[in-house]
Image (cartoon, rainbow, N blue to C red; front, side):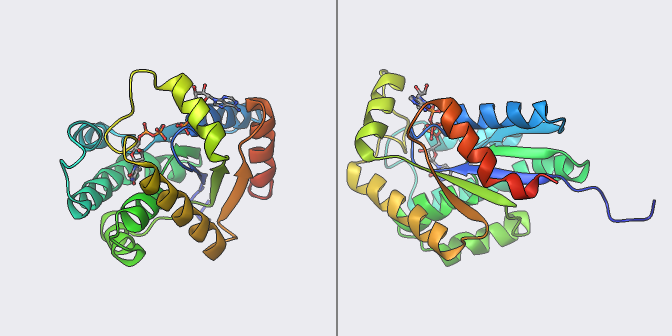
Length: 213
Ligand SMILES: Nc1ncnc2c1ncn2[C@@H]1O[C@H](COP(=O)(O)OP(=O)(O)O)[C@@H](O)[C@H]1O
Ligand SMILES: Cc1cn([C@H]2C[C@H](O)[C@@H](COP(=O)(O)OP(=O)(O)O)O2)c(=O)[nH]c1=O
């Protein structure tokens, strides 16, 4: 009584399309539940009704539907709603939040590959979400050829508006993620995504072990 409010843990999964983030978000949430934690699994863009509506605007339509600036604002608006309606309430009741993509995706896609730069993205995040950062970000890394094979198996029907951009764009995204990991080694851990899903999940659990106490 009277002590600090219970606070959960906020874990995000990042990386390019097809590295296994959605698969691992599910597996990680399961593994944490099996350890007795209250866990919510969520994703961006989306994760709240308003943010899911913005997701449709962002991922459907022609490649040039939005400029990089408008796109960055829409992602920040979706994130603000997601943080306010879903993530903060869960953390405040002491739950763990496992989120497939978050701020680092905006830093890599709109900030890096899209040319907006990291400072503008962080300013939007400060305005929209009070600058909330994950306790740990797990950056899944995979050689490009393995990623292409996984995507070919998953997306026979075609990629979405952003996933469908060219190889140079996706290399710029990967470079931007690598720079974030170098700059923030305490928050961001690179995890090798090669191997069976179970092997990858064990690596992820090892990379958050210090938070689980
Ligand atoms: N460790 C793995 N080995 C082989 N295939 C995988 C592995 N993890 C995921 N996949 C498959 O690769 C594809 C992309 O995985 P997904 O979890 O959707 O990635 P992301 O969310 O990063 O785009 C899916 O078809 C998925 O079943
Ligand atoms: C959260 C976020 C996603 N994106 C992009 C990355 C993906 O191409 C797309 C999300 O699509 P999604 O289908 O969720 O990703 P994946 O293919 O990795 O499973 O939106 C951004 O450009 N900026 C962001 O801030």
